[in-house]
Amino acid sequence: MPHIVTENCQSCRFTDCVSHCPVECFHEDDERLYINPDVCVDCGACIPACPVQAIYDVVDMPEDKDPWIKVNAERSKTLPVIMSKQEPLPTAEARRTELGL
Image (cartoon, rainbow, N blue to C red; front, side, top):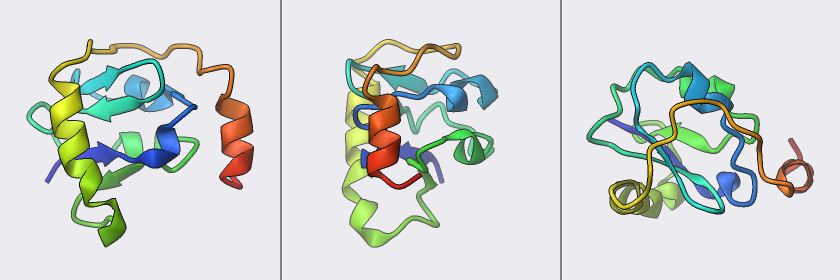
């Protein structure tokens, strides 16, 4: 099963996960990242790399995160691929603090 990016990524866009991914499955918009489930190889390397705990394996995620499966699948197909670590958004540290992480 693929991995997905959930709401914790909103206003962060930390890209540590991208540098751990062996394929080009991450996509970005102005606010967050998404994973293309057709490209994800389910290695799980991105999960511990995310500083805001925004990434889940769909098998292990809480049920309230289910809508994010469709969001990632749809949005990833319309956005550019991100292939390397970039600077997080200016709001990233405040968001991490807000999340208690």
